[in-house]
Image (tube, rainbow, N blue to C red; front, side, top):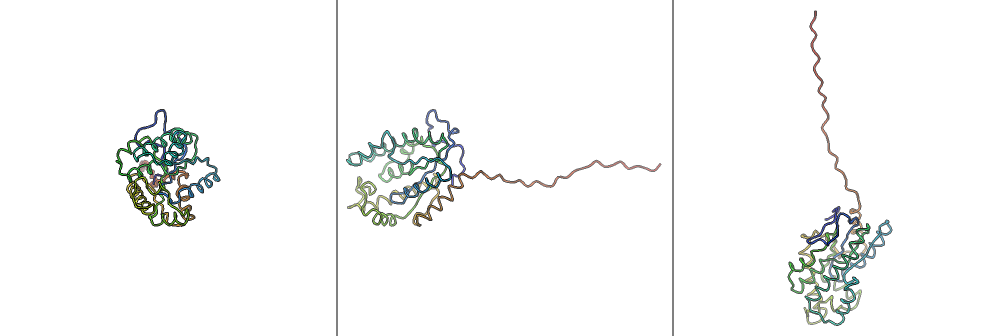
Length: 257
């Protein structure tokens, strides 16, 4: 776990004019594949943190002023190729980092982000793009204080889509790449690729893996436990000192007169 990391630092290339030691807030990432329940947990976490007196910024992919609207329009038209979409999402992240995340951290906010650069990586890898290249593109990212990876098997994701939404989403199914003959088959294959990519990143990027096959209440309780530890003051280790030995000078022996 990356608890108690202080101060923040950049993965690769720092943003000009940003001193990480001035960022006093907490950067907390909730990662995971589509339909795993990230939004539900972040909504609950935001209310819980605010009730504890923390100012919270909730952000996520495709919410930047610069690129968010354009991404939504591009997805409706299905006009961009995978490489262009990856760069579009990278632009969205860079704008949110500079204009949302960094200012909030500087003001001492808790930043809860629904996915981070890791979903950007996973989506690119699932579409056959080079991992090293996309990691270099996103090297301006700050290292979060904690990354909680909500992990579930694809069969659980399928059941959640069927029961909760009743239909598969075009982009969540990776239909731009036609991984299967229909949306169900493509969803299974695409989300399997996403999950495999996130699994491969877990150790290298210090993910805390949360079993998302449990109930929402159980997942929330585990997240609360981990996040509470981020705000605890580091415990000082007590050093046991050996008893002090006082050496007194020997008294001179008086001889009888």
